[in-house]
Image 1 (cartoon, rainbow, N blue to C red):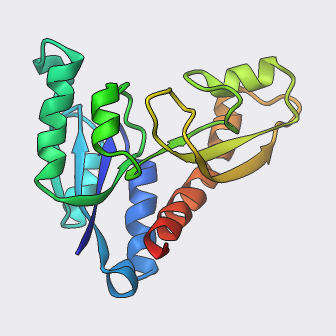
Image 2 (image 1 turned 90 degrees about the vertical axis):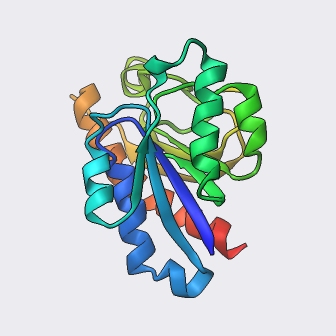
Length: 192
């Protein structure tokens, strides 16, 4: 069995898109793959309820309960490793991971970022794209490396930046594309 563990911090819309795509695309039959667990660093993350409703194991590893980033990452890794994942997908997981954590899952750790990397790594991507006068924006699925938002690109989607766009309107348009490209990128990895 190829287990996929998804890490979230909030509503989990990308996680839900991955779960739905995995079932619609019958990843279990085609690749022997399934989303086996959803782990959050926040007990109030809305996506946990969706995962439970889908019969997926959930866990919370609260980053506030640990004295250091390294201690949190060690506890998070222990929870992830219980599921023996072939892939770990960051889906709105809002924590910067230590180089040791990233190395532990090298080649198996994926992320989605709401910009056309390498443009606008980090936070406030939509505001920065609008302020820079970009005509297009988008989203990127990439492998995670120790350098923030700079790993090998697996998939991208482009949306226009429209006159009068706000951060919210651009973010909503980009998010619809994220829901399409993240499952597609994971499926490509599973197929390889």
